Amino acid sequence: MPESSLHEPVLTWYAEHQRDLPWRRPEASAWSVLVSELMLQQTPVARVLPVHEAWLERWPTPADLAAEPTGEAVRAWGRLGYPRRALRLHGAAVAIVERHGGVVPDAYDELIALPGVGDYTAAAVASFAYGRRHVVLDTNVRRVLARAASGVEFPGTSVTRAERELATSLLPDDEATAATWAVAVMELGALVCTATTPRCADCPLAEQCAWRAAGRPAYDGPPRRAQAWAGTDRQCRGRLLAVLRDSDGPVHRSALEAAWADEPQRVRCLAGLVDDALVAQVGPDTYALP
Image 1 (cartoon, rainbow, N blue to C red):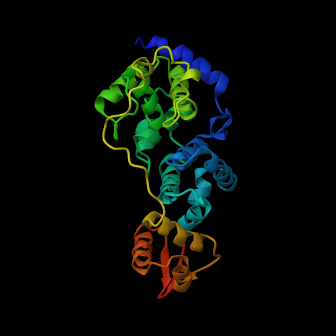
Image 2 (cartoon, helix red, strand yellow):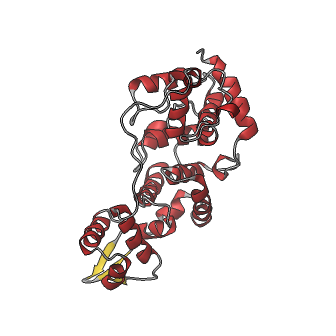
């Protein structure tokens, strides 16, 4: 499938159907983009929107966040889940202030050197905030390319060299067009070429899609396991953090005991939160956000 045959339909579709998201607006800062990318990892847009707005109102620049204790970042993270991301954002803010004068860098190499920033996030910020030409491979992009170009329902569990080479070969040469292409393919995967109920009739690549042409064969790779929640350590940690987040000061151990009945699991999760620097033990029996 020639590379040029994909660009126009996807870019035209994106121009007509893209969502109005604050981090995509022309006036959005690179900091807004970085915050959104960390928040959107494993979290739906609808849940991120109000937290992102509140975060940017409180900390409109990296320097504003860097001046606060890490516990305030954890508190403001609310119920987005995976609260280590709040610590990563705080660490990135501190590094941006110390290394880059408070300005989010535009170079991939400098972005990926920030705490908590990996390949995807570095490429996304460079592309979406600064219009740079980079391969941006999130779950949605990988799924679109797997179906349209490779003819399989889902990509593998991790990015392969062949997958990255395919994505690179499909990247438009023009820098600005490449940046738009990156977000357009991502949006197509989020809205049309979805994981569970793809709307092939509405897809701009329907006539070129290798997976659709093959009869939409079912995925036959390693089992794709849904993440459990009820009764897990993740749920326990979330309950304990919620007690601390909703408190104005240190919390006695008894309040945490009331939040989760299973003592061995509660003790293990509380110790893990302390080890992860998400919680601080401030007395023999009292805990607080750091």
